[in-house]
Length: 205
Image 1: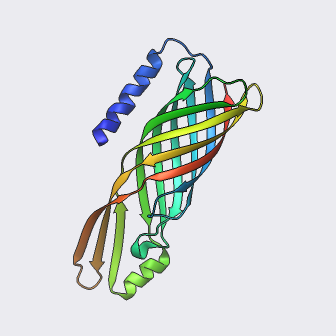
Image 2: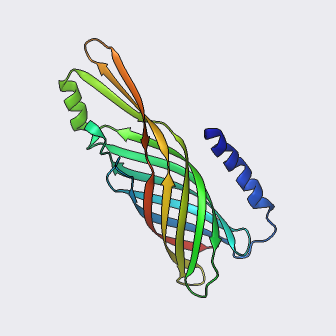
Image 3: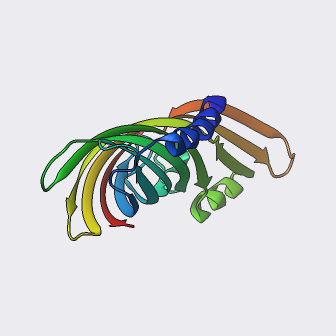
């Protein structure tokens, strides 16, 4: 899966720069999202910045970075902070309209989720005579999206969108006895697929 993502990010810029026309220019965007990550996390907040380029009249390419924060609902980690940094690329198909401009798209991203154990959890584990670590692997995910943009001026637009990220990951847990230094490790697959509801602001340049 990682090799597929690496190939995608290497090939897509070449395709973009090889396109012959740029009908609508380029846009710099920022968005904020409410994300629901299935049963593994409470609702969280995501922030994303992106560059969008019109490759042809009806198609655009978007490259962005995102940062998600939430709280886990997995077992004893129910109060722990979970963050996820992502690098994404998407292809968008835009539907011609006079005012509001709807679009649909699909993309791929490389995501780096991370657990941060809360002080209460670490204290509870210490009372049991153990320390704990819980790591999530980085990996490639795919997403579908759709939205609409509404021009506010010649250079600024307001947008709203929905995106569904499909992401499976491995949870690597390790418990170490404080007195014996013996380790117990366990790896299990968890689903980090997330539904995002976003609002955004775009500036054309």
